[in-house]
Length: 459
Image (cartoon, rainbow, N blue to C red; front, side, top):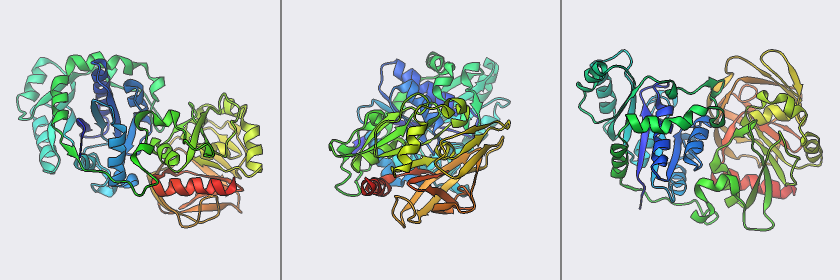
């Protein structure tokens, strides 16, 4: 059994101030000298970038649908090693899960981790009614353990008295309306951490308006975690290096498969557990920037999602583009997800009609739209037309504003039973040794092993 002090910062709904409150609490606790391990419920890539920036420890996703409960516990325990406290930001409203159910909701994760919940409530325009709202949340599912509430968008002292006087639950914070408590947004969500300077100022603001001593005391009430087990001896616990693994990982075997991962402002959406699983399966992960670097020598290349559409001129002139084409022509596996799919095609057209040439490895063209084209979890199976073996099941997520068109003779390797993909449930476009789709896969042990084995066979 493992005891890790932990607290979940949940919200009544999206937009209640949950993200900035959670990031501010992380920053304030770190400013006190604590080692804070951040987490994000759900498949989001952007909020974790803010967590990582303020905590200086890599934030991890916790998503029961994609990961399964055992892998979720493994990730939580491994990433929390060496931390004084774990702070987990929820997703959407506390009870919002898949298909109007509980799965992958913040409440679901709270119950898996047996973690106390602090509910963030936007009280703008309310006084005593806030008590009725909070009563509904706290009594909806008795299995969820509530520690208290943080009230956001607060007004005058009279307003505060009217709200707090009606509550019978601990109030850990009264946060007034402030520009500091908003983070700029663009398509796909908030701006990435490096693009928003206000986050660095939230620590003192939260320290002033929240009771951090009470919050840490609540986190310490959490008991032992269930014991985690690994699928087999291939994945011992020591294979997972925890919070900093994503940036430094290398398998010890000198003959390890070398996977070069695109990591910069254009390609930055990855599930960090994927790197752990790849290394545990015998791979070495190398990181490079397609925006500035030459193509490194590797046995395979991995282009994740991100914002390639914001860097099209630089990518069009990329120093690695020609070498990547040569590598693909020579049969080196190239794997892409979402933004990576777009980049590996022939062109990307922006929402205002400007077209840029891209890597040209796939017979496809992508066009940006002003409204999202897909948003859902994915469940799929491989068809055996790529370096991944036939019949490999996987889960993941897709969220994109682009639409990709393909030639009439296009081949696909993924058949989705859930999710849209590139074309009505077909995803994973294949051209030679190149495989790319809209699905962001969560690898887990099985997919990681087959991914590495597929590369070894080609090598």
